Length: 113
Length: 112
Image 1: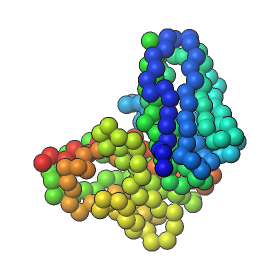
Image 2 (image 1 turned 135 degrees about the horizontal axis):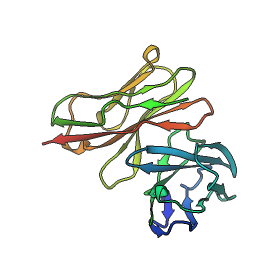
Image 3 (image 1 turned 90 degrees about the horizontal axis):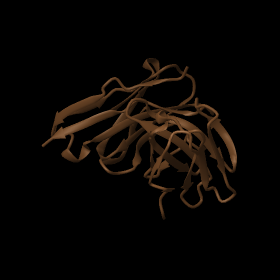
């Protein structure tokens, strides 16, 4: 079974730009969660989607948004990028939700200059 | 606010030493508890989980964890570590339908 895939793997953007990251979950998984990982803050929860509905949202500004499609693929968007948005963005998929075993992707390394 | 604390930021052990990594969470109620591990260059993966039942749970690679409800703790243990256990370990807690909260992580270095 193919694992969670994330594209792109690396991204360099300039302050003020916007970015879209993509996540393809494991086949059959209906839940996708997004996390931001930084050395200082660790793993911070961004959002969780289940069958195209947002179940939970973390404490991030409105510049961070996401969505899930009918095939369970998910995208997250960050508008008006700031230097502090530089991080590894991880996607995780699960059969039933983040309260169950999650399978993580390799992440997208975003650098904002 | 919900929070998860991992008090050991970096632990250095020799092979065959015993390991215990601490994890405490902010308050009770119904919780699902997890330990995830990230080996160098690899994805985060689940080590073990506790939902209910026997508070001593066993995971992969000889790891186990004990849920102590009265102490809001879920410490990770391994009787004898190996060099291949070098990794970063994350405790995570989910309260009911709330978001999953991760601890800051503990970096474990095993010297051969």
